[in-house]
Length: 303
Image (cartoon, rainbow, N blue to C red; front, side):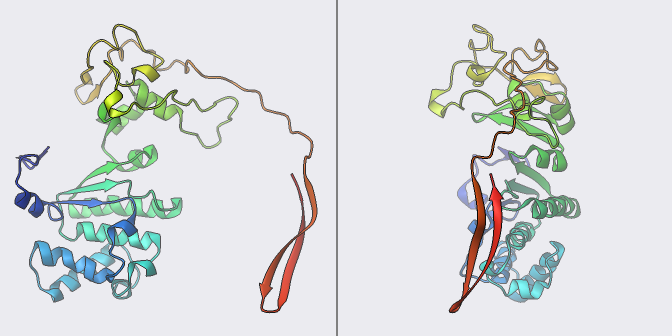
């Protein structure tokens, strides 16, 4: 693992400790797991420059206020004097982003940064991360299963299966000209808005991922692949093969597969007719108790 021409694997712990948090920072998928519930948010932000740069508490406080404003938190002074549980999920994630950027790292690693957020907040956080990356000149490494987020934020993408890279290239190359059956399987299992489930059914990838100690010979994806060729795909370990100067695939057959062909296991189903009512309810009531009295409403339901 090379970072700024240094092999991180061989560095002593003291050197790694100086790099972590200052040159390489990380944002985790659950903000509450990254924040100390017993400390106010401001103190947690101030720790970053105080520990890594040795600045005074007053200067650290001023930088924390500026960073809270940079991540678009309303009333930064009030936010910094709050405990994590007093903030919403979106505000907590913005604090975690501010904490990661306090030391202006060269590399920011984001592990599913929007998983715990609803889609509306996710869109705002995604846009914020993109803008902060440009403003601070920080390179970003996204780890995500959300292909829409990858398309929106990334320049290059690496698709991994069973702990190995199976396809890598620019986002445009991988999304428009995928050259590995697993990548194609991922895209075919994504529901499209407005798609008719009878004319375009979802195609699930059969089987399960192998355990690390039970990987098959040859291609790890072979037992689940519709394009598997016995004696070839399970012969030897498959290297990353060049598709273009900037695009590579871990598949012996990527030049032979018809990538525009429909799925082998695609099945089309007729729309089921609407059946008769099997349950009906009248005067359905829900009670709301307030002191000794009760308020209620009624409605009818048919299933």
